[in-house]
Length: 248
Image (cartoon, rainbow, N blue to C red; front, side):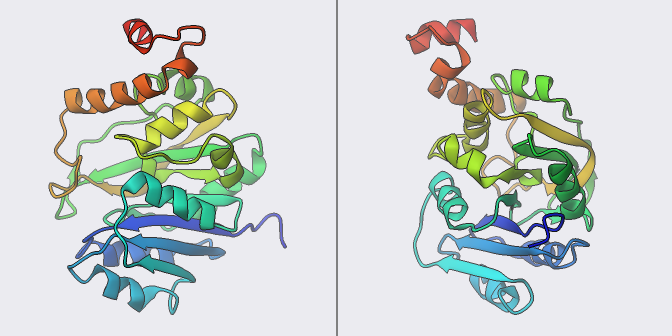
C-alpha cells in the first residue's frame, strides 16, 4: 500500500436527505483525491434517499449501504466507524457539499502530522436553496481547540477527518445530545487536534434539520449537556457533576 495515498472511508448517516443528497454524492465522486470509499447508514428513509444511494453506491462510488433498521445518530456513527477498514475516516452529512480538494488537503495534512488525531476545516454556510449565509471562523491551533472544547466545539462535524484508532480508544461515538462534541471532549486529554484555515465544505443550515434553526442559547444548552456527561474529564478530582458544572 502507498503510505502517501492511504484509503479514506467516508462516514455518512442519512434520513430523508432528498433532494440535497445528490449534490453530496456528486461532491464525493468528484474529489481530486480518488482513493476513498463510502459507508452509509440509511435510517428508514421514505423520500427516495435509499434509491438515490443505490444509484451511486457501489456503481459510481465504492462502498456499502446499510439499511432497513432505524437507529439514533450516535450509535449509527459508532457502527460505521467500527465497520471502516481504513485508518482515516471523513464525516459528511447528506445535505452538505464537499469542495473538490477536501480529501486531498486533509490527507496531505494528516500524513505530514501523524500525531494529529482529529482534523477539521472552515466552511461556507448556505441555506436550503444554496444561498450563502454569514459564517464564522474556527480556531486552528491545538491548544485553543482542546481548551475551548469544554465550552463549545471548534470543529465543524461535517468537515472532520479522524484516525479510527484514536476514536475507538476514546470510546467511539455515543448516544448523546451532541455526539460530536461529546467525542472531542473524551479525545482531548490524549489526542492533538487541528483545523485547516480554509474552507472544505458548503455546510447547509437547513430549516428541516434538527439543529438548523437553533439559536446560540440552544447550542449552549447542548454543549453544557456534553460538559456535564464528561465532568470528570474536564475537572479531574471533582466527583460531583453539579460542582463541576459550577466550575464550568
